Image (cartoon, rainbow, N blue to C red; front, side, top):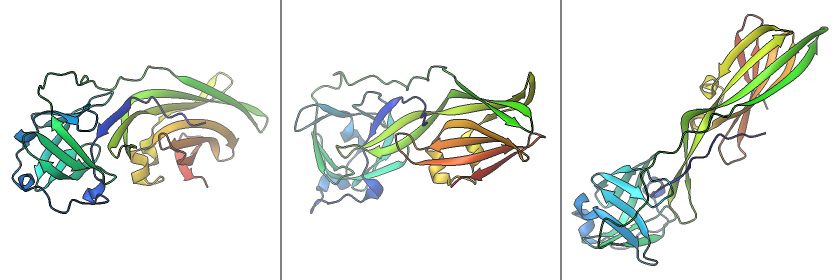
Length: 264
């Protein structure tokens, strides 16, 4: 079962992957080279439908998304550089006092014009809400050498954010925000507690590839067995909104030492 924490919402961030759009303008507009960030101040509307796309205030860009988080930006040469989950670089087609166009991550030219006022409704600057403190509990009984052991799992949503960038259908990059879990495990024999510990995904560094672990979530845990080696659990670490997961066997020795093994 894949429990991926609480989805806070998508944060739209404009990006051309690695600065290499699918197609480029034949002749960049001359104003791009000498462009000043002051030209971008205000609200910019889509030429096709008149809807707001972005707002620039000071050194921050706000995007017309359900959750509006500011992103720092700068203009370097003929490119707009935006700081999100990753540094985003995408090439400008044209920039002057009233016109702004750039190439999306899909290589499409998006053309904007500046709104006559910068006081129009553009969404609210809101931090994603902290997940509700809902704890899920699981337990399992294992009989080993005639003794009865009960292992518990408590899946606790945390306030730790995990940001996973992805490309939306319109060619814009979206910073999807999720919340990681901290999972408490413990083992009892009758009323006697034999072991207890909080498990975090960072404990699997060196076991799970770092680039995967950085944007993944500790989504599930199961008590599986008791053997001569100790108490055994299986942790599930998954990429949010995807089927990619790693499974890690956790073995707890009688003296409380943990060892990890990546399962095939």
